[in-house]
Image (cartoon, rainbow, N blue to C red; front, side, top):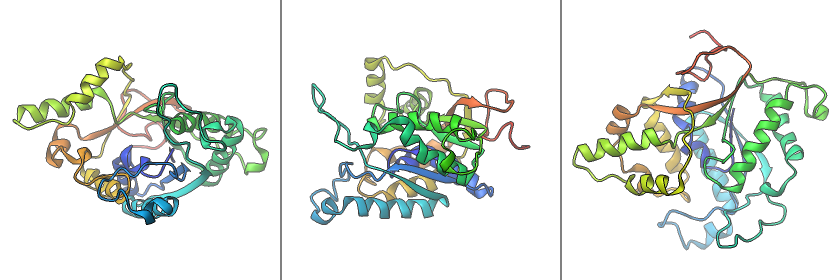
Amino acid sequence: MAVHAHPDDESSKGAATMAKYVSEGVDVLVATCTGGERGSILNPKLQGDPYIEEHIHEVRAKEMDEARQILGVKQSWLGFVDSGLPEGDPLPPLPEGCFALQDVDEAAGALVKLIREFRPHVITTYDENGGYPHPDHIMTHKISMVAFEAAGDPAKYPEAGEPWQPLKLYYNQGFNRPRTVALHEALLSRGMESPYGEWLERWKEFERVERTLTTHVPCAEFFPVRDKALIAHATQIDPDGGWFRVPMEIQQKVWPTEEYELAKSLVDTSLPEDDLFTGIREN
C-alpha cells in the first residue's frame, strides 16, 4: 500500500517501483488522502481553462483514474479535503475543514479501515518532513504512523474491521541528493544542460539533512511507465517541463533504482536492501 497526499503524488514518488511489483503479481493499492482540490493548475497549456478551474475535483479524479490504469494499481480515496500550500510571510491560516487541520487520531481511522480491508504487508508513505513541507504531506506522515501501529491492535478502532498488522513501513526518498548529483554530473559530462544546478544550490541554502537510503529498488525498465502515469496528471504536469529533461537512457543507466528509508520493520532484514519485501518473502 502506497499512502499519498494528492492525486499525482503516486506517479512522482515510487511509481516505477509499484509498476515493477504489479508486473510480478503483487497486489498494489494507492491510498490518496485528498482530492487535490486546491492544487494549482501547473501545466501552462491548461491554465485559464474555465471548465478545468470550475471542475478541478472532477478533472483530477479522472486524471487519477487514468494514471491508476497505466500503473496497474488499485486506488482508494480517503475523502479528506486538500489543504492547499499556504504562501506568504506570515503564512495565512489553513482553510477550515481541510485535511491538515483534522485530529490525527480521528483521521487515521480512515486509513486503519483501508489497511484492515486490503491487508498489506508493506506500506510506503512520507517522512516527518513530508518529503517537502506541504501540510498535507506532513499530515499523511502522521496518520500513516498512527495507522501502522493501530491496524493490528484489536483494542484500537474496533469499528474499522478485523485487525491486520503490516510488517514494514518505508518513507519515499526518491528526491535524494546522491541521485540528483549523479544525474547532474552525468549530463554535464556529456556536454548537456542540467536542470539540477539550481536544485543543488537550494539544497546547500536550506542545509537539508541527508536521509538514510536503506533500500534501492531496481526498476529502470518501468521508468517509461512512471512517466506516462505522471503525464496523465495533465493539470499538474507539463510534458515539456523539467520532469522530463533528462533523457530516459541516461536515467536508466546512471540511476536505475528508486530509493526508500526503512522506518519500521517487524521482520528481520539486512541493510541495504533491494526489495521492499526483504524478510517477508523468499527472493
